[in-house]
Length: 395
Figure 1 (cartoon, helix red, strand yellow):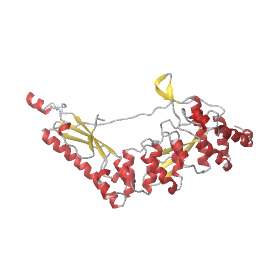
Figure 2 (cartoon, one colour):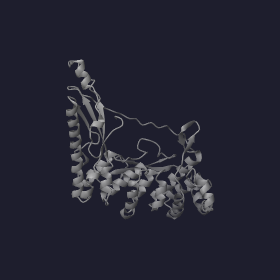
Figure 3 (cartoon, rainbow, N blue to C red):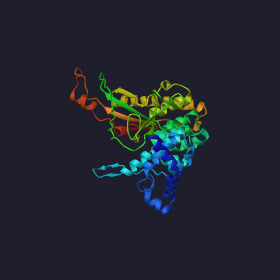
Figure 4 (cartoon, rainbow, N blue to C red):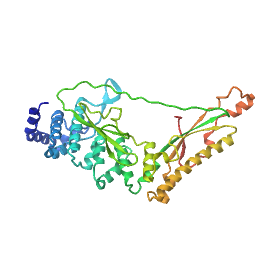
């Protein structure tokens, strides 16, 4: 876009914003019909006009545009994808929804660059579609304003995963009452216990991939600044949330919204490993000093059902004692009440994998012995401790 065109848009600011406001302040019944089913803005809002106006305001640091940008942000409703006619089980955004999402991404970039405070209710509505941008705004709010909203996002099972992660990281810096209990109790330890015949060892491994498709060129749209959040430092990134496990943010410009892409654009996830690291931060120690693992494995030799059961329960007790030690350390720092220690222990989900059929060639026994040893191990006969459950499938 040429400088003349940019300033032409700015010169027409009053006319453009007047038309947007007039369209969006229509009677409530009309607005509801326009936006209740698909989200975004009412259909009368021109996405490209909004995108250029927000881009120009960001480009020249026009703080007078902040009230209008906040008005647009405040009118946003979470998007509702519709069934894809070419692939009925899948759901996708319409062209209008996609353009409105792209325009809203420019609005949020402008608000962030202009350092504009955004109301909590607006952030609630934006979070499902713009997790990374909302997380950046949340992290830059004063702590007295961000703490109540961070608690809400952290506790919500439906919260955007990036916003939930950043909320937890912010709360871990100055833990409010009840936070440590929820953080620790939310950890899911996935233990794999393998029953083996004496002399047999089993190996484990997994891998994953990230796939994304290129998007076509787009003309006559501004580039939108977008925010990548990472737990790893990179060139050009700055610290968004400090601590032993800092969160870094970097900004890049694209012609499309990239929040759905992998490779870091889909944000961060508050999994069990991340929760454990934040617990370590609250204790003032590096994450590697926490003695227990999120995904421990144990191979227990099966000589008899009684001995196997005793060894299995011993493994569980050993793990849970380490969890209790961590909870008591949080209690000693004033983050947990003594009455909350037991109920704040991580849940251990145990996968029992019977691999006794992998018999070493040199081991020979009678058919009766083999049959006895290979009788199924009854999970129902093993009384599990509190906060330990059987996994429905091995992983």
